[in-house]
Image (spheres, rainbow, N blue to C red):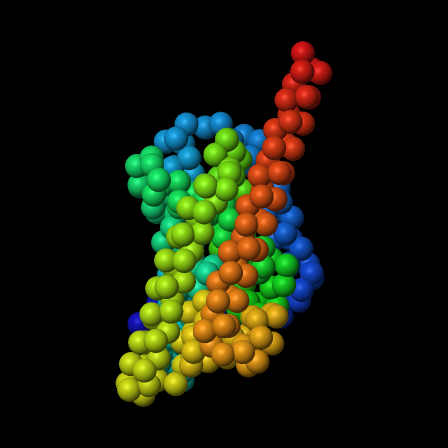
Amino acid sequence: MDFLIKLIELGNLSMSRPTNYGWFHLMFVGIVIVASVLMCVFFRNVSERGVRIICFVFWITIAVLEVYKQLNYTYTVVDGKIVADYLWYAFPFQLCSTPLYILPLVVFLPDGRLHDAMVAYMIAFSIFGGLCVYAFPNDVFTSTIGINIQTMIHHGIQIVSGVYLASRYRSKLNIKYYLKGAAVFVVMLGVAFLLNLTVPSALAAAGHTDEFNMFYIGPKYPCSLPILSMIYPKVPYPAFFAIYAFGFIAAAAIIFYAAKGIVALAHGLRTRLSKNAA
């Protein structure tokens, strides 16, 4: 028991809450940029098996860190005793949690349309979610060291894995490929909608008061996302849902084509340098 208490306390070590574009934030921004470049330079032409191994490593990393996060949000030590009280708002089915479910499909699905759809989702929507957090991480920062490290690694892997997959599958990046990824997003959004319709009522019946708002689209709670938080109270819920869905699909399309352009530019530069060297 003493060992478990010490382990929980270790997972709750505190720090000054990081600030936007402070040293902690900028350190991880630098790590993500360097990691993305290195992945694209050294692994952009690996075999299909190599891609799956790389994505498996990404998945294991975020999955292990997610287990830590869930345990951290469940167990605390009060007066020398372990107390369990799960915080349902931390349930792992937000947009940025979806790589937990998509990456294993990238790893294990055979080549084909479904595999393409999962890869396209990672390129467009995973990068989009990760960039949103890295651009404005204030809401995800806490005073717990482990949680801050977990969230920056998790969202960093979203960006790095998406950029890497864009580089590896650069010849496939067209509108049809993107639409496959958008279809996956629609499915995930639908799952979140159904969870938001059913789980809050069940939690309330069980005496829980935690907010449960997956993808921040639940009809029972106001949306707290930038811009959308201003739209939510001013329009009927169906209109808000449509604005949310089409807005995310459009933003992810911009990310997808930006990744395509950057990859093409880097490939052209690499080819030119190789010719000059020869």
